[in-house]
Image 1 (cartoon, one colour):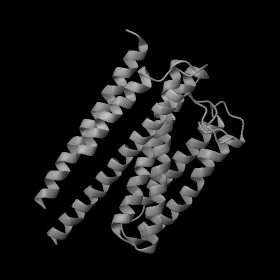
Image 2 (cartoon, chains in turn yellow, orange; image 1 turned 90 degrees about the vertical axis):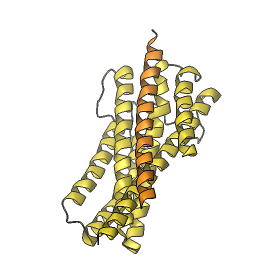
Image 3 (cartoon, helix red, strand yellow; image 1 turned 180 degrees about the vertical axis):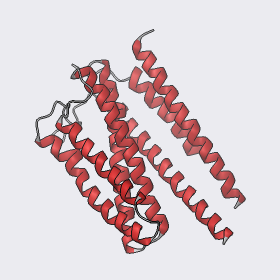
Length: 217
Length: 36
C-alpha cells in the first residue's frame, strides 16, 4: 500500500515537472510537453502486449485459466493505453500539422495495431469459454504480438512521416536536453509502475473470483 | 490564467481521479481478500 501511495505522489511530481521544470522543446513550443505522456502511454501499451504474449505462450504450455485471463487482461490494458497514445498523438498532430488525423504512416500503423487487438477480443467473445477458446486466443495473441515491432518501430521509420524523429534516433542517441530527459525517464518509470499496479489488480480480482467459485462448489 | 497552468491543473485532477479510483478498488480488494 505504501508503494502505491508513493506512486500517486511520484506521478503528481512528474506531472508538475513536465509542466513547470522541463523547458519547451525548440520549434515545438509548449506542446512538446505532451511527449512526457504520449511516449510512456505507448511504452506501457507495448509492455502490456508483450506480457499478454508471454502469458499466451505459458497458457499453450500449461492451460491454466489464470494465464488465459492474464493474456486477455494485459491485451485490454495494451489496447486502452495504445488508444490513449493515439489520442494524445492526434492532439499533437492538430496543433503541429493542422489536422487531427491524416493517415500518416505512424497513424496508419497504430490504427492497424488497434484493429488487430480489437479482433482479438472479437475472437474471444465469439467462442464459448473453455480450453478451446483459450488456445485459439493464445495462438492469435502470439501472432498479434509479432506485428507489434513492425507496426510500432519499423514501418514508421521506413516510410516518410510527419511524426517527429523517434526519441532514440538511428544513431542510438537520445536527442533531449538533460532536464527534459530527466522528466521523460521519470515519467516512463511512473507509467511502468502504474502498469504493474493495474496488472496485479487484474490478477487478484481473478484469483478472488476463482476462490469464490471453489467455495460455492 | 496562463493556458499552461490550466492544462497542468486538468492533468493533475485527471491523475488524482484515476489514482483515487484505483485506491478504492485496492481497498475493496483487500477487504474481500481478508474475508476469504
